[in-house]
Amino acid sequence: MAYPDAAPTDLSRADARVDKVILTDAELHRIVDRIAHQILEKTRGAAGAILLGIPTRGVPLATRLAERIRAFEGVDVPFGTLDVTLYRDDLRLRGATRAVGHTEVPPGGVDGRLVILVDDVLFSGRTVRAALDALGDLGRPRAVQLAVLVDRGHRELPIRADYVGKNIPTALTESVRVHLTETDGIDEVRLETTT
Image 1 (cartoon, rainbow, N blue to C red):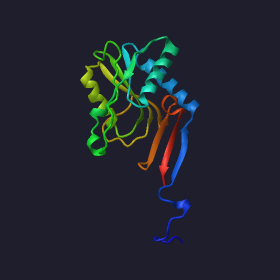
Image 2: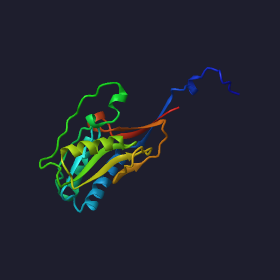
Image 3: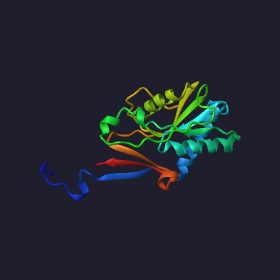
Image 4: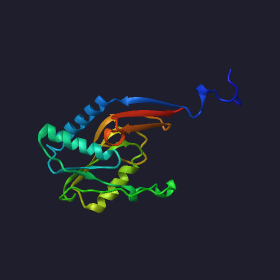
């Protein structure tokens, strides 16, 4: 029988974390390939489309998608970076300053084009809302779509992705950590749970 006032043992420490791989290197690469194929199908060969990666890990994912689309169809899809730092609604809540990132829009801009925003994890939807606000200051796209590697649920805003690599239902006590070779030296996705 456990007593409520008993000190936790090493096995039951409140701050212990369970960490497991939910997507391996090979699975992550297959998912990027699948999303690239879906973009080609849904956009009729990516005509008039551009990819904008949301820093940090959305940028290498956008680059990979552009490379895979080129490999599959020989189509060069312009890609760039969309920094959302100044558009976030939680800047004043965090108490710490954030460095403003770099926005790089492909030649020709976004006006009249299909913009596909690319991010690693879709959670509350607040980062995507910030991206839409930032995009609005750059011009008026014909349409905007969203591609994410992982959708973990728990939306706070009415936002959904058009292209989802993997739906991973999570608890609020869990975190999805995407690691990419370009930023972390390894390709994998891990689920961390605080127990």
